[in-house]
Length: 444
Ligand code: NDP
Image 1 (tube, rainbow, N blue to C red):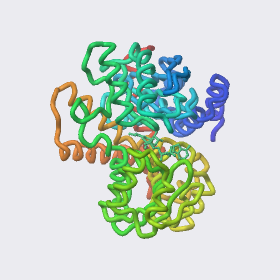
Image 2 (image 1 turned 135 degrees about the vertical axis):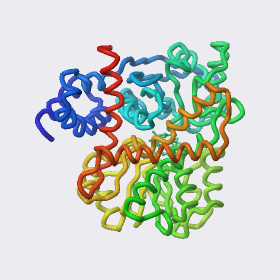
Image 3 (image 1 turned 60 degrees about the vertical axis):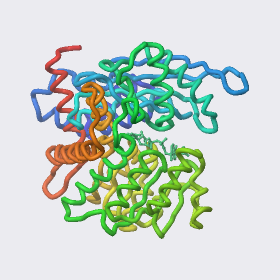
Image 4 (image 1 turned 180 degrees about the vertical axis):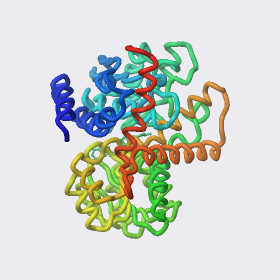
């Protein structure tokens, strides 16, 4: 790292004490953007990166709610409205006990670059709460969502800020929050994405992040005349992103042998076929059970920890941040892994990313490879505005095209002789569009 990058990161760290994940995300971007600015006069002396690391607005609010025993609970709600240079703030809501300002600022910052890469007119934001949805009844989830939206509704709108789902926020939570927004505002608008299909949702939105990640990996593999066909794939997580990554990889002829959750991973050498995936979807989305139950059902291994010890050709981290470290990266590569495509946000630690790049592994950063979700949210917003519904095939083909274009943008800015540095490519391509808009709009 050069001295001016170190100085920049140090200043951000002093201004944002204790925000470890946010500093990590800023450093990863600064390492590519500061040298790029140094070579491009147009972006110099405008404090562009300094302005970009400062959210336009951060909202923090109290969320009181009553549980089934009649007891009062209180959680903290957040919305980080990071950057609106190219469109209304757009980004998910995460409900998880680990949620804090640092995590939401890292996610919001990443979202700015990701949304820019999609080529759609969406700014970046992120929000959520330290509420833990695990083991709560539907009624408790509804009470919480209604209280959360009572405050959030004052700050969002279809042309201002359009939240979506993330960890712990799926179709059920989006439904409760949309219902409450509609009641408060007396307005039926596309204020959230990930909506139910018969009340404004888009086909393929639930599948989009997982499918998009596999499409992106497919684009990377094609550069090397490779494909998913016949490959062994390891996936972490067993939520929304992991499930549909598993479905698409299998459809393309790969064998997915592992999935995980926060208690451990299952290893099924026979492969998780469509029948077994149906079981996983019911287990995680309806029963809200643990992945260990899969091992009992299909008589295979369940172990604590992460699944990166399993030999594979392709690894798709689809659970959470910093879930794949340097040891894991070394194990994956020594076991023959050739491609790592992030479905989750920032799942790979910085030293592991550096290792993959030095080893010339095909490595896709989440801000490029998981952008299919927000891109399809953008398509949901378009359909809402036009009051039309596209078919499954139409949305899927637009998604494929968007992922292909993101891949091309990464190649454009990340190609270095015989190697494509997708991290550098994604950071610079994401930066350019937002920076140009900020230059046009003056000092705001
Ligand atoms: P879900 O809540 O549907 O699933 C999350 C999965 O990750 C679950 O299997 C969960 O296990 C596991 N997990 C969560 N926290 C941890 C942890 N600390 N350690 C190990 N495993 C953990 O979320 P999504 O699938 O929607 O999101 C997964 C990732 O993808 C996140 O990083 C998210 O930001 C990112 N993403 C999601 C998008 C979307 O459209 N949904 C879009 C772009 C990125 P358990 O069941 O035990 O909690």
